[in-house]
Picture 1 (cartoon, rainbow, N blue to C red):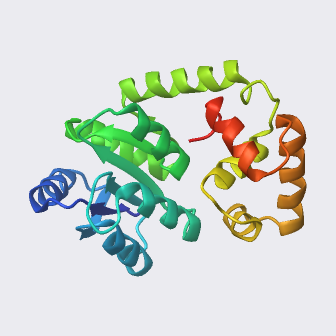
Picture 2: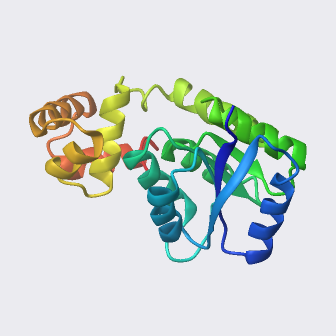
Picture 3: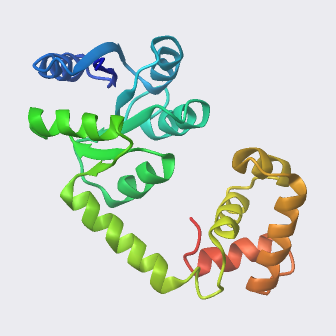
Amino acid sequence: MEPIKVLIADDHAMVREGLSTALQTTSTIRVVGMAANGREAIEKVKTLKPNVVLMDIKMPNMDGLKACRLIKKSSPEIQVIMLTVHDDETHVIDAITAGASGYILKSLSVNELIRAIKLASEGKAMLHPSATKQLMAEFKRLTDNGGGGFNLSDRELQVLQLLAYGHTNKEIATELTISQQTVKSHVIHIFQKLGACDRTEAVAIALRRGIVE
């Protein structure tokens, strides 16, 4: 089998070099490039075509979360593992939402790092234990909440979140790869379920109930 091609994206040169050196201990992985920020990572993904990207969350000139979303949008076959020094609950949820295949701490052992990369290349996920606990807690919260008690579908929740971000129907359609007519239909159903008259009221209700951010 050919080695797994890995791109390392981190704004600290020492971290990039350290990860590259650590991964050289196995013949099943080949580091094909390194990037110092999210924008550079996106450009190198286009030319180097890695199988897995090790992505730091906090980087200048586009953070890892946004870069992950853009990479997954243009190249869904490429797996992204988020690297962090903090097991922050918000980042865990954001990373999964962005399409990451893993969320691991930089303090992870070399063997565990290699295992995470191999799992990602197979389309499987690996989360730091504390991240798994946080994700389960968030899942339970959403399940208990039931869309804030309004019985909103997953797609309606996505549309509602984008409404909260101020997106137009056209922008939502592009983001979710659906037609504008479908978006309009979802918006109407959201209004009906929330008992709202317009977008502003729907978003206000959703914010009060903690359905959207």
